[in-house]
Length: 299
Image (cartoon, rainbow, N blue to C red; front, side):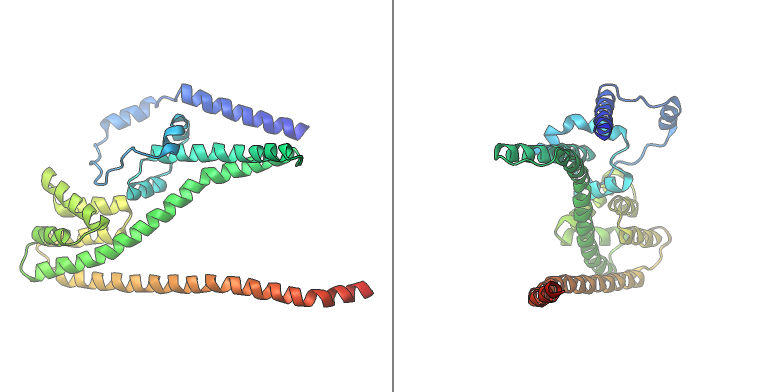
């Protein structure tokens, strides 16, 4: 009874605190407000993050403000969302909806079992509900991280082809700006669309293309694109010849891609052997159980 009262009291207090934060959001301190007023404005992001979301984002919208007051999502998760072109508010809403659904799912199961004439211990809905709520709250983060990593991998593959195209354009006598633009207009797909968007932004804002490419690489958390921007900036500002550097970088990226592909293939092979091992172990247990049972029964 004491444990139950403590858990119920903690849950009630947490719910009241979340409701209070949603009704009365905390105000920024004077020091942070002055620092924000005197800070240099950051450049506008190259990647757009639309606010549109599914039904979960619309249902869980009231929980966005309390979760954002806790500092969620983190900086790394925000970069993953930027790669996926999703807004942080949609992620927080989905986390809240899945957490509430996980919290209520064991209770609904308990009611169904009671209607069928079965009964589980009263602790089951509470403990299982907390576990399912935690799992539902963390599940969107895992999904976002996996999708962002897959998109970064595909971007690196496209960037390797883009490096070769830039090198060919430079070898044909094109300038740095022209080589970057011509190579981006040749390719298709999401990665080349982002590169074209960055170059268009540089042209409209009258900034250097390698600056916007560097910004795009930092937003996507793709180190290879940042290195490309650094190499191209040397050619644009100091007249350095970067064809050999781009060729070496493209070769290194292809080698890295092949290594990753071999590693993924070996991991898939190991995962495929696991069911066979489990089946073989079960077969051994099935064969050896009668003998073991006979020996134990004769003792």
